[in-house]
Image 1 (tube, one colour):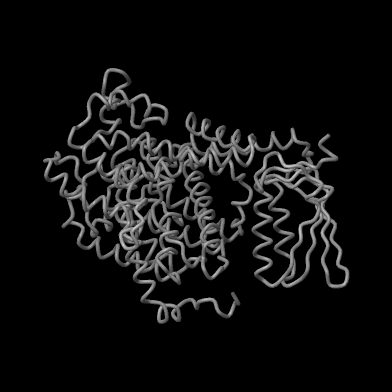
Image 2: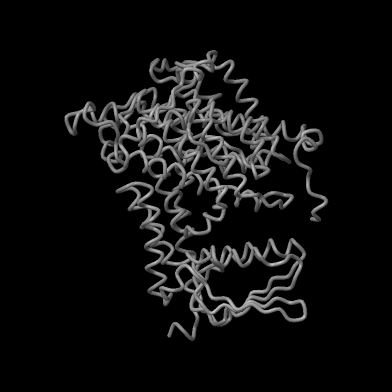
Length: 540
């Protein structure tokens, strides 16, 4: 598609595409509404502030974003970090307020990341480690919401039992302890809550399989609510098992983002870094993924988008909200619903604001087990068995990195887990012949003959030096014939090979020609087209 056929932006887009964008914005709002409440509940935040986060992500962040079709809002992928942060600061109201301080500082750090052009940060992290981190998050979400399906909270139940320290001395549950608490929950569940939870689960996993042209357009979370609300009332579900809006929109005036957590320097810095790094990584991955399915093949400005998300987090933290990201499920739905411009995200926020104004009307109406079922669905998607099969298909070493990241994350935390994945990847690279001087740098030889650019690379091409390679590739003039010869390189890993393939597609769309030469000198470590490749002559 020619550049001049791409949609307009700004006010021109508002005038031209409002009908499609407002429809998509409404459908995304329907999807985001219960998820935002569920994410807030699971994050130990007052439920209404999940909606406030989505409102800020739509009404404010959309105006400054560097991407066209991504939806900004609270993320299931950050539930584990947020809940852990609240618990580490003592839980309850004080834990929430101290967490808000960390969110504000993390947002400022993300803005700095944007100005420092850290938009390419995503390319440094090996894909297997990133997917491992997300799968670990999914496992933790499922293990926690398993208890919610039965109308229980392991913090209130299992920790209060004689099996472990009383809640007065414990404010958080570690990931592996969530599995230990399963027998307790199985013997103390609420029968009616379990019925609502199971019915909701059936809808969550069964509704997407419906092929009816009209029905499949209805988001499964909406169907869950339409069934679970009357079912809960009919069963006489206990009053404590419904979502209660104990705060309203006007209460944001009284919210105080407390920065006193900095007294516990290590804990404060740890969570600021986790919010900033994991949130930025998830956002950048989403921007990258949505660019690939944008029907107009537009290229987002990752650094600008990072600054916009950072701004959103500063405002969200000040007003009591959760940390936000560019969220992949809602963004994918936005594309599928026919959105054309950033105004779809704006409308999604506008509808969310309308709901907030009326939120008191919905208090004590939505059953908590239904929200738990929706989050179980999110968790299963993150940690689905196909993710394990996909990693194995790419290569056994990718599965080792993937599983290693999961295990370390479950036994420690997300920050240690992702860095463990990076270390495992580096060790495997060294074992495959990568020289220490090649870990972060490449040594290209560039020449230009008859208006054709030739690049010769003799060093290994791995995730840790891809930022150096990408800097070279992005500096290439558009519309040229470029040949990159890697026949003398020692190795090319999965992450780098996939990134090169994406660059090749982008360069061709800019009416240029990018040729990768020398692949015949490599042997693949698996049949997968993006598998790790070792130079035949150097790997003997």
